[in-house]
Amino acid sequence: MAFFTYHNKKIYYSECGNGPPLLIIHGNSVSSRMHSPIVKKLSENFRVISPDLPGHGRSEKLESWPVDFWFESSRALYNLILQLELQKVIVSGYSGGALIALNLALEHPDAISCVIADSFEGEVSIEAYVENLENERRTARRNILNRFFWFLMHGKNWNNVITNDTAVTLEHHRKLRRFFHKDLSQLSIPVLFTGSAEDEYLPDLKNIYLGLKEKIPLCDVKMFRNCQHPSMLTAGMDYLAYISNYLELKSLVS
Image 1: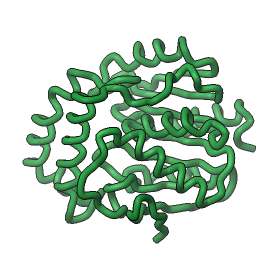
Image 2: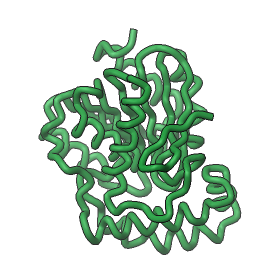
Image 3: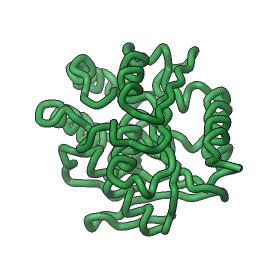
């Protein structure tokens, strides 16, 4: 098991494969175990790096999470990029991980060659989602399958992770709302937004993406059907095939 240290906390990551570096960032309330089924396939063409975000999974737990969690997590992962001496990293994130991926590209454009941002809510938090979050999480905790799932993601401290994730999402919405410190129009590298046309959490996702596409010079949008949130993990081989073709067209993989 590999770890790096950020702010005196150990943060877990795994590596496999060879080729251009591909950093995959998981979403809120889960860990890198969530996307482990697709890592083997991606490692055929890439050096895949999969961290557990601070306070998640096999990373050391945090007493409290910073309110600007998605920005602060991007700073942590930039330290991982520096430690591994990576250059021109392809960054792929889903849900909350997409927010972190975009923050990485905005703050450290020289280190990133491309961003694939999947199933995220845009530049600001969405009122309807936040309003329902506490009730949804309360209901989910009563379901034994959900509890077992979160145990697989985080181990015996899963309940604290879900509590902290819920709290920081609500606090961020009240105090900040914006996920980025810079405008997305400053992105000068290829950006691909992906998502499900039937996303159960983000029903207006396509319109959100099209609005963002107008301000980002090198932006493409791909919506998948017959899948859910996030499309990266529910669209199956269709997703991986599309991403492979996209990266080949951008000359980012041989």
